[in-house]
Image 1 (cartoon, rainbow, N blue to C red):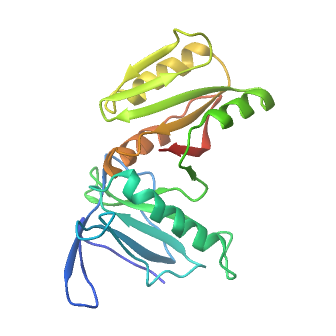
Image 2 (cartoon, rainbow, N blue to C red):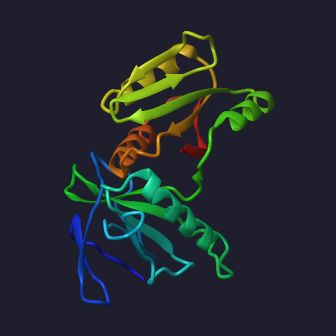
Length: 228
């Protein structure tokens, strides 16, 4: 099944006849612009709901690639529980397709068209990264760099090298600052994201998009993300 969305502000007509609007998050340039064999879910921003989120997932088919359309105005606190629910629903399906993936749908500004950001293997944790940090430090010959996202204007990069080895940056400068820091250390480094759940889904997508474009030798990203 193919599915196409032509508007970056999606209007969706629910069965009750009420029209709802969903504003897609924006990214500068998407690496993925075409996906086939998909089904779609929507997370609307809706102030009439207890958590301000309305999830529509009626047309999801477990064997297809999933496009998750999340309103950019939602916070991670509002959106992540629903995203985790969808991940678990697909993982626990008796009709799984191991090749099918999950993507967030975005508005690619460079082409004024749709772009997609994969999150198939991301595990979202509503807790501190502390225990995980200690575990990988003991078991792996790799250094961890904790990227602590407090807001769009306050991102702290904290490494284990010494007590003074941290840098505060922001969304606009994250890519360059992280690139400089990693290259200067000349180590095998794994980035762990530790994100305040009050940031917007738009800010989250911006950060993930920037990090996905880093192509640095000996740099990897943890599949575990700590959002609380």
